Amino acid sequence: MANIKSAIKRVDTNNKKRVINQAQKSEMRTQIKHVEKLVEANDVENAKLALQKTMKYIDKAIQKGVIHQNNGDRQKSRLANKVSNLSA
Image (cartoon, rainbow, N blue to C red; front, side, top):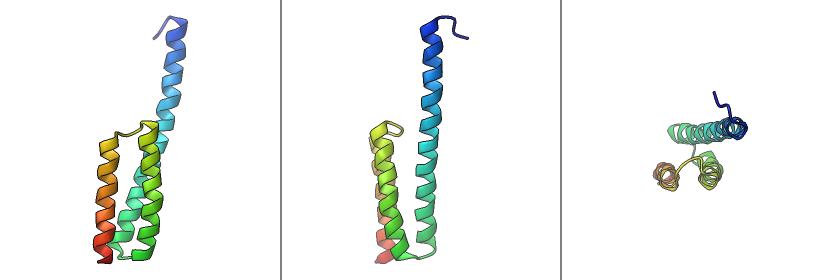
């Protein structure tokens, strides 16, 4: 355990950020699964709407530094391909 006052504060700060990051990442993953479920159900219109919402969640996670830029771009690309193949 940290003995120095600034180290104790840092541990608290890191724990708070970790909880926030976990929640944001979890919500992003939930949105991705929602889109994939709609794609499996061949629901084109709702899948397109959910894709737009999911893109916002992914972009926000990238912006906050929760996930890496390339990871987010890959996720968005895969989802967009799934939805576009569904409508084609």
